Length: 397
Image (cartoon, rainbow, N blue to C red; front, top):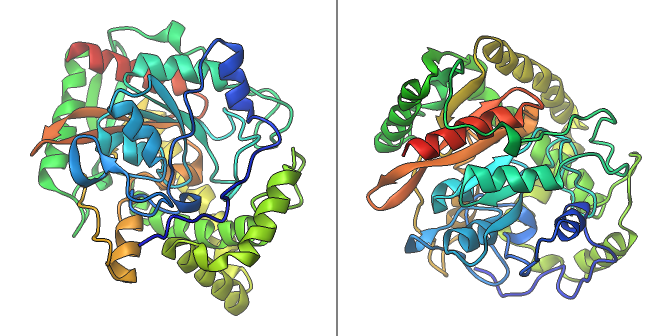
């Protein structure tokens, strides 16, 4: 499927990302760079330049993507914690399929300075770890404004997550989102059942658990598609991963290297990237950005729909991914077989990249030997709340 080459092969950053600098300043050790999917355009783990990333729990199965290497390394015990990116679920999907914790912070809580950008309104960095406590510790270190990322409001609150961890969920209201379960042609009944049981078990920790309906959740994938495809084509493909018209740090070395490389080595793009760029250019040429604009307008309605549910509940619950990990496609697979498994598992995760709500995947058990993840979604800037619930759930098990 891939020839092992990369349009970023040989690139050495001019400076560390803010998140990396903060980890080093707090005494953390950077063990190395993990593999990710080619330019992060896959929720599977079969499109990286170095070959498929195997699921540590079952060889021959997806680790999930696009932060495939980060989750696989944590799950295999090679590192204590890892960083991941999340534009459509790229941090939470591999966490769910590898059986570890993955936390996508509130949009703007963690600076993306120094990272390769895909779509500014979707870009997130966050922790992958063995436990909610470790994820909270890493989030406390990397969160906060750095003065260079315009995604961050100047008054963004510090999360202070570790200090708020407890073994109980007293007074917490949990809403089980109906539309996150039973996706026609997608959901697996054993995944749904494990997540429902896990959600109901929170009642024994002092929470109140009830069902809530958010009908617009089922349209989140369509809103995300328009934003992700046209937005990443504009920022990543045309803007060389840096873009224009924003007040922030411009990585000129990255811009120059990627800009030259994408022209000289365009054929080395993964099929997922080629598909995205071709479709994004077609939509721009044929419809002049109308559907991107419409999706950005609908994003406000989607955020309002979740906020209405979160006015009744402190946290929303659903499966992170409606299925367990799927087999890695064969090396001689067709384009359709490569692209399909790269994009067909984001239906529950991607809406929260659009709305910016904090969301995390927590392991709730195995089915047929493969991990299942429960996704907890909270109010903006209330990352500590969902980490607290995840921690209490872990301790109870």
